[in-house]
Length: 410
Ligand code: 7TS
Image (tube, rainbow, N blue to C red; front, side, top):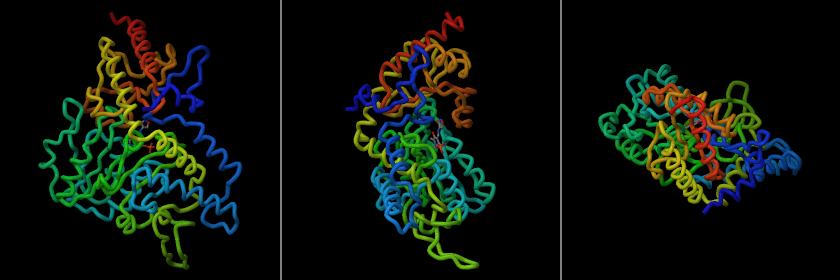
């Protein structure tokens, strides 16, 4: 089991205080804090190994290339990819989904085809598909949300027919915490010959993910939501699909030969990594994966179940508080959105910050279609990770009670 109180010591930022008030960081769905091992890996890389990759004829450049490629191997291992060449480093989830939209969906789809999404998608898994639809004439269709904050699978058979060529679904909602029904959607999509993309930005950091067992076609995720640095993430795809895709960007590193009028592409993954890649970030990503693997992804999930159950219990003690998400921790992750009476989420977040040093996110969480469906303009959201302790939740609850006093709620 994870002892969050002990592993917190690995995270220097969690020692921050605002004067006498300790920081209580409850915004890990936006980005996680970084352990010393990740910070040190990046710093050591720059101090000892920095050189450009894949082109040096000297030892330092070889070492940098090995560091970069070994990060890829670690990321591939985390998700049980068949080969590390199926892992493309991208700027993050958003860049990975846009790459798929531009270089895969654009060529696959034409007028009358459909893309299946759910109402709980993040904007980065909606807007690229709207752009695809505009370019190709394909249509978007959405699976609804049930009153208990699950994806409504009742209409799946009705919505999924041969016109659907792509189903793209969040593995876990960044607003409600709901775990996406990836298995059910994948089975149904396969039956009509559709391909499946999983937006794993909130899934991969929080539980074991095995792309071979999931049987999906593509998975996207971001390092910064799983203890790693910003500026890097991954697109995993089935090798044969990635092989068939055209590169997005042209430039150095992505070719085997360049003539005056045409060029030959390097094999995957390099075909999709034009230019000098984010080498130090990759090294940090690899160190983050090492840290998570050491903890054990089963234990990461077990801790999330515990802390989320504790949070839901404690939040139930706060009068006039509405939680927008499943009550059963087994059906959700540790992103908990809520509204307190009619206090605007931004005011609530400001009070939590000023009174208790509690950092929560407030707003639409880049999921406006979902917010409209829930009929709320904004929510406050507390989100947890491996270092979250019950005391963090207690501070949140004290802050919420204090907000009731400030707003004169009887
Ligand atoms: N998909 C989901 C489910 C997300 O939660 C996010 C980021 C993204 C995609 C985009 O990831 P990026 O790394 O490319 O930005 N979610 C959030 C959030 O909830 N608060 O800030 C960012």
